[in-house]
Length: 155
Image (cartoon, rainbow, N blue to C red; front, side):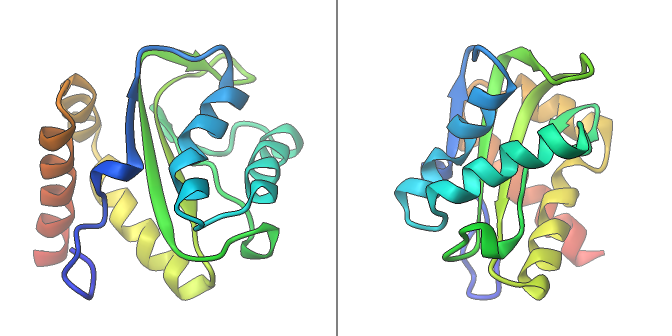
């Protein structure tokens, strides 16, 4: 849970989709809730895509999981994370298959590190990722993700 007691991941920031055409569409789609909630501007989405074009697939943190992000000045208005879960994987430039895309937007470094800790709590073990990927229900997904974060914080 966040400092104000809210769950870090909520249903309006979570999308389950069967498949997308390419990794660019995956990033755009994953970021959509952040755009709609005015957490980011369109320029931020372009910057995330440009980062992958310039620097390669560095956003693939662990197998099957990508975390696109850009610098705050690229168009971040607030802090947030949105999640896109795909049934069929999308291939990134070097052929890595990704099922889970976590879009990260932060206004400054301290928030960035905090959100990064939350995100890594749900993907730091292959077993956790596999469990999340097998869930078909958004509520179950969020419950498990938030549980992973709580467990991490209690350690």
